[in-house]
Image (cartoon, rainbow over all chains, first blue to last red; front, side, top):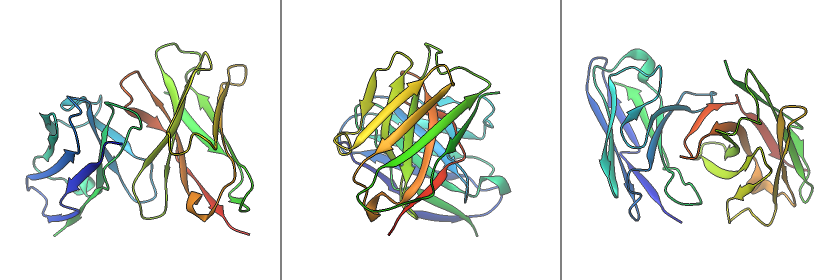
Length: 107
Length: 119
């Protein structure tokens, strides 16, 4: 199985900040890397697919980049509604594994 | 607008079979562009892909669960279902159903349902 490792596990930031979350795969997943946002008690929401494609309806302050084994999710101009847990997921090969999550908290 | 809703018992005894159904509205499980899948999340832990099904009945399972998992689709009811046999406390989780394309990125998702395995 491909292991997905996110860093940091938690992060404190302020409204208006720019934050970056990193996801590293144990082997290359090409560009098959997706990002989700999950709020407490809610289902995950797809933000970005195929490394950098923004899902319809997702604000443009979210962006993704990377290739191979190293990927980043960047959120510019943090808004109050962005404080949540973020997960990466590889869709390169079965089983389609997720990272352990990065909890973004208000400073 | 596509919506998915999980249903099924919230409590299952150890060694028994967990059974959940996902009802799809605002779209069709027969849509050849999509697959229908299950993902679970143990309390406080990360997400785990369980498996997926295509409207034709083709199934794709996580190898770690394959021996115990069956996913089926009922196009007449616009539903798909999950059965997980021989459950233990480790199967306690929120179970989500979701749609995905060939790219295996999931959205939208159902709201999730907590299944607790306990005697």
